[in-house]
Amino acid sequence: MNFYKRFIGDIQAKTGNLSLAEFGAYDRLLDHYFSTEEALPSEVDDCYRICRAMDKEERKAVDKVLARFFTLTSEGWKQGKADEVIADALPKIAAARNNGAKGGRPRKETQQKPSGFSNDNPDETQDEPKAKASQSQSQKLSSLRSESARGTRLPADWTLPEEWAEWCRTARPDLDPDKVAAKFADYWHGVSGKGGVKLDWLATWRNWVRDERAQFKAQPADVSEWHETRRGVESKAKALGMGPWVESEEQYPVYKARVMTAEKGEKNPPGLTLDQLMRMAPQQGARQ
Image 1 (cartoon, rainbow, N blue to C red):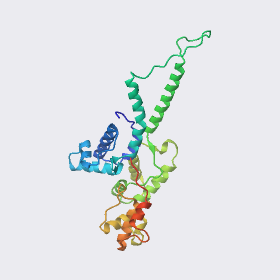
Image 2: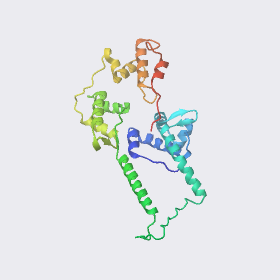
Image 3: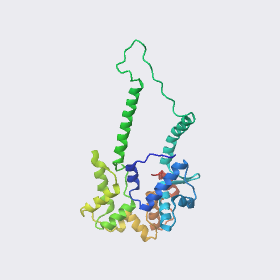
Image 4: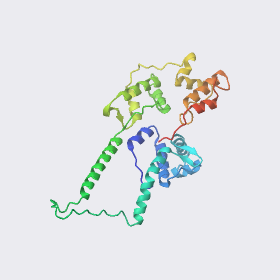
């Protein structure tokens, strides 16, 4: 494919928290994916070369983008959304190539009116109404694209990304990120009309945090209640020598179960094995 549609609003909503290097890696990997019409190489070094990632930081950016937006399979790094776009475009590409081999699209024959009927406009053919309808359809599609480019709504299943929460803790240590996020989601899911559409949700979140009154004060995780909040679970994990939750690598219920198991000194969560928890957790879909 030499061309694919690029919806700015959707891209901004899904990549708003990427660094400049990470966003550059994201663009280069997708361009290669669409140009070859197949999965990215499974060898990470090959992906480094595709992105021209030379130093350590640039390669870390490629690693993060692969882990977050692609899934490693036997065919290589794949992305469901990109595969859908390619599958939708292939019949059109094949038809265009077939027409090109025949010398271009066949011309439409002008239908002649039966003799004996007058024609107020001799230059008008029956193809013209179709052309006008096609033009009207194109205008509608263009209008829809413009609406998408102006922004997107907050997803119904939105959860606070850890990077956003960490920024909140740094910028406003007096606030509890999880409680502020709950209020943020309730507000934007309830807003109707154009007020609920934003081009950059990360910027919207940061402005919200800056303007938020200190009504949700951060409280230290109580030992008896640490497992009730994600912040408490991650604090307990840190105390046990475990890392923070990484959304792209593990479902949160599985992570929480591991931390609770480690805290109790048990080998398996009570009642459920780790394998059972993994089967209960939905498989992570491809992201874009």
